[in-house]
Amino acid sequence: MAPRRYDVLFPFIKDNVKDYLRDHWEEEQCQEDVRQLRKQAQTDSHLEGHVPIPCLSENQADTDRVIQGVVHNVHWQMSMDRKTTALKQLQGHMWRSAYVTGQVKGEVYGDVVPAIQKWREAGLKVYIYSSGSIEAQKLLFQYSIEGDLLKLFDGNFDTTIGHKIESESYQNIARSIKCSAENILFLTDVTKEAKAANEAGVHVAVVVRPGNAALTDEEKSSYHLITSFKEIALSIRR
Image (tube, rainbow, N blue to C red; front, side, top):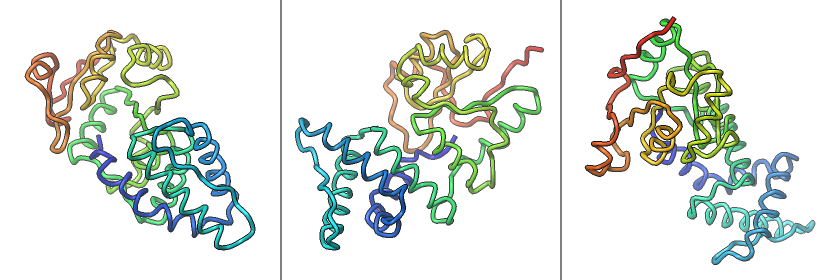
């Protein structure tokens, strides 16, 4: 639905985490984020290249050292494409601040909103399932370039329902929304997710957008491909 968050949101974290920590250091929420990151760093101590976060004293120079340690740890986790709860928590708080202050706007492809509006007018329900947290999803669509789009969606799911490359996750979602899998269409640009959804009995369309990972010939022949939501024609069952 939106351009890949890797292109905007994650670079924002890398570029602004030090300033964010300095600006919010005295706030309890920020301190809790640091505590959770430190606990995660201790858990990761056996990993090659892990980055520890020093403990804090009353010395201002020490505060700067701790902040730098957090910055290095966050950069390391992100370079490893880790999705730890501690990292997600800090990222979520940074994104919330950025959206509210207008530093960041959620981007959506131009064909998305008209298509969803048409589906909803036809009585269909629309849900988001993303590896990003539910809070991050809502922020992106609440503070989008198209305005507040939250009203377009009937619910949100993240990896607390299950990982996106596991078929059971899609079965869990079907049960949660009280809909049979065969009546669900899942849109994705990741073929591993498409495979998992198919195995759960869910219909799938793979969305091909500029900048997405290239598909192999086998993947192209295995899935229904679309380049725009305009191409989706759904049958309505009353």
